[in-house]
Image 1 (spheres, rainbow, N blue to C red):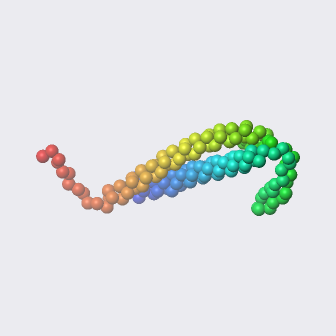
Image 2 (cartoon, rainbow, N blue to C red; image 1 turned 45 degrees about the vertical axis):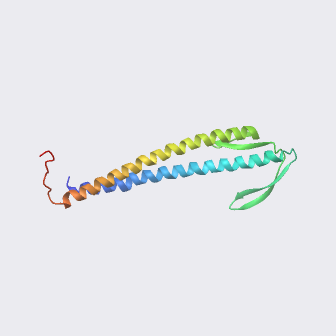
Image 3 (cartoon, rainbow, N blue to C red; image 1 turned 45 degrees about the horizontal axis):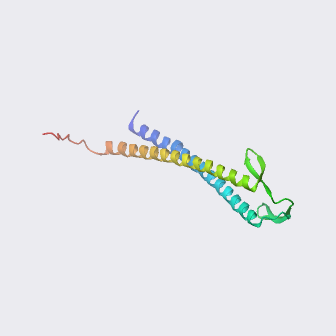
Amino acid sequence: MDREEKILNYETFLNEKLRGDLKKILDQRDKVYQEISDYLQLKSVIERLQENETKEPLKTRVDLGCNFYVQAKVPDPTSIFVYVGYGFYVQFTFEQALKFIKQKTDLLTERTEALTKQSAVVKANIKLVLEGLREIHLIDDTPEKKQVDLFS
């Protein structure tokens, strides 16, 4: 395998595999951060509802998507349905929901830390390949260097 072919192989590996992997990892991490943000927003809403602590029906606006809102009436504002994953919602009291949100955000935070470590490994591999490419370019571009005996 000649030098140009090696360089092409390294560049292909770098651009198609490593940079693609890094993008996938960072996209996954962004999705997890968004999920954490959604749960923290829900936590804030629950805390506000707890402060009001009323048994009366609650009137609110619900976003149907694309900023289309409708008025809604919640007959029992003492419990809430929370998305727990895989298309399932569970009815919780406010205390149960806050406990679940804490556990879920802790788990998601661990996931972001793992993804951050994975991205660091991929970034290190990218740097290693770039350094290897730089050395391949320099090896053939520089004239033969004389060996220097350090112990004489």
